[in-house]
Amino acid sequence: MTDCKYDVVVVGGGAAGMMAAICAAQHGARTLLLERNEKLGKKLYITGKGRCNLTNDCDRDELMRNTVRNGRFLYSAYATLDNRALMRMVQELGVPLKTERGGRVFPQSDHASDINRALTRALAQYGAQVRLHSRVAALQCDEGRVSGVTLAGGETVAAKAVVLATGGLSYAVTGSDGDGHRMAAQNGHVVTDCTPSLVPIVIQEPWVAQLQGLALKNVRLGLYRRGKRIFEDIGEMLFTHFGVSGPLVLTASATISGQPIDEFSLRLDMKPGLDETRLDQRLLRDLDENANRQIANTLPALLPQRMVRPVLELCAIAPEAPCHQITRAQRRLLGETIKSLALTPTGLRGWDEAVITRGGVACQQVDPSTLQSRVLPGLYFAGELLDVDALTGGFNLQLAFSTGYLAGAQSARASQA
Image (cartoon, rainbow, N blue to C red; front, side, top):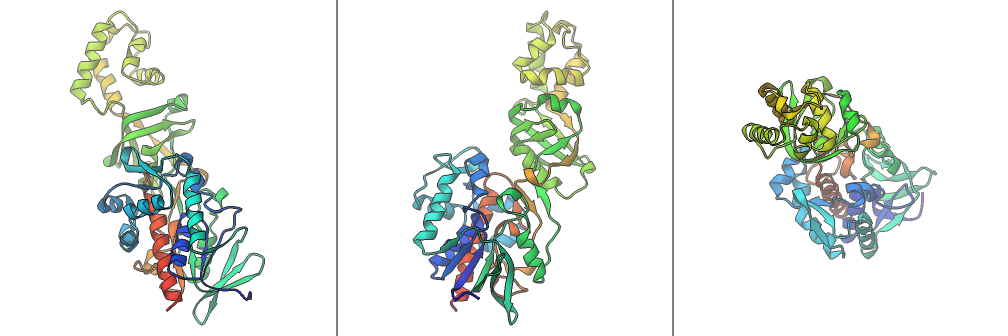
């Protein structure tokens, strides 16, 4: 065993782990942060397409509504560090912020690296030690409680408390490969089934692949289960070679994850600002004004150019048909297709494209007021390792920071009691 003994050892240098180490050190605990990678916050660098969607500027109720799995478990974490407190903290660390559509909060610079640097400065400011290239292989226990960790090379680091913040299974290239789940399970914890969540959706219709790369803005996407609508929102989506992606799709996938895919269907409304009557009037006007033009050359005024032929094919309308030949029935069908374009999900993409992990350490075995294990005293959990997850828009990073802050504070207090 090493001579160096710490009050708190934090395992994992992502968002939750950095926040836990900062908070533990801030509360006076001798703190060591162990990170297996060559740098801290590796996953942070790629969040929000490299811009780092830090949190969401909404009220507490909205935070809870967007935490879709075991949200009540997070009441204490959000009460300890909510989104407004996180924003103040980051700005006090020297990073100006901005709020964009949907309440999404980013650094003004649009650089995730600014958030990483700010958290790294805070670690140094409060005296938390950091060791990189340090993979933890096992937890050490003594008389029924945690006593430290053993590194992959065999070195043991003693501590009064350990915070596990190793992440889930998404983006394994960043080091999230299930080590934390394995260590939790080895020490008596239930780890619920883990599935990729907030992922692109594979679509059956062959015409979708023809639209690869086409981004749609201000469209409405509805998700149905056995014919009943269970999700609907307006925003952005993207066609890919296998199906659909983008913020709307990722949010919808959170409901599908872990469920039978054949129970679900999607409906795309490409003109949510027009009801059926007004859309029909618009189509009638456009057809009348362009009576001698081909329908394929008229619809781009209403739809993206690349959408025109697939939509016409679905309506069995010849692209070269002159507008004056379009019947009332065809016009009505065209309107219905624009307002409710059917998409059939056949699966979800895998871990390499998942934003988060659904599943993890069972919340029933963790005290929500402290995030300490009910099974193994002295062990605390934070971040994606837990069986909690939220929707896109900054909510998952907020979850990570809030649980990290609470675990760091409580582990520090317990280690100094």
